[in-house]
Length: 347
Ligand SMILES: O=C(O)c1ccc[n+]([C@@H]2O[C@H](COP(=O)([O-])O)[C@@H](O)[C@H]2O)c1
Ligand SMILES: Cc1cc2nc[nH]c2cc1C
Image 1 (cartoon, rainbow, N blue to C red):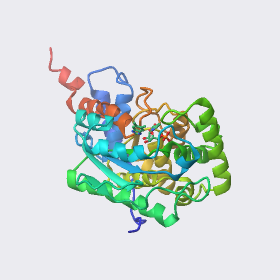
Image 2: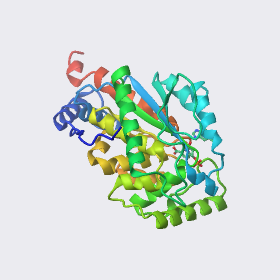
Image 3: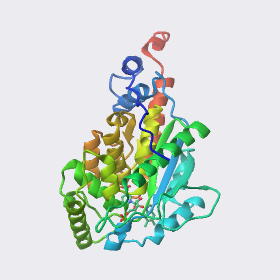
């Protein structure tokens, strides 16, 4: 299994964007009065190439994996929690299950590298390895493993698009320790000091956050990831689920499916995807601003502005799911509002 390097990401349809903007100008409201709903609608039109974009069939894929870096004491929770939460997803008890139901989304859990396997029929078992290595002492994985994890994400997104006909995608993650990998990536690409982009994750104390940031700083010094080579970055400090999300985003962008990006970890993965194929960010909307302090820096690297800020920091795709109705509102505005021409009939 290799990561496809021959896929193209189409340019946005600027003609349709212009038509959409013209249509929005005709709607029965003062120009610009629906604020960002207007730019979201024309953005979705440019992404999909459709004047009346449709995002009515959302899909959520959660990628789960473990992280060797937890041996350094960087998380408030033990590694076993990754698998326990994966079981929770399968039993539909997690926040993302509840939210997926609220928005009528297809849901799929993919094991891309948990320490412990789960034998159940509603999980997709595609583990590349049983957790990454501790990147404080050695590379997280080989470049080949990073490429394989990218390929898993790419294939799973392609699969959901084909089999469920989804037209909007959310990628979530579960992985104790993954905020450490994400902070390393965001520090590298934003140029911010690890202290500025490291947060409490699942709930560290202030003192523990400082220790976590120092570990990240020293790990970056030891590993020397080459930021011009995103596969090198993934292999040195990355996570298997981060690689899979990056691959899944590239697949969605290739097929012109709007991507609703979740929080800190998903945005770190989006930065990797951007460095593989810069145009993929054209198909991304950042659902929410995570409370993790590094998320603002990540969003800046992506050149985006999140839709909402509910001070969430859960991951799983939850922030994106909560923001999804905003996309529905934007598309309904386009399709259902009357125009000033219609008004002329009222006299
Ligand atoms: O997405 C976010 O913004 C986010 C922020 C903080 C924590 N998380 C979740 O918490 C886990 C990682 O936290 P930690 O402290 O173990 O690195 C992982 O399962 C993420 O889904 C997620
Ligand atoms: C309980 C729990 C749920 C999560 N979901 C995503 N990351 C998580 C981390 C913890 C600790």
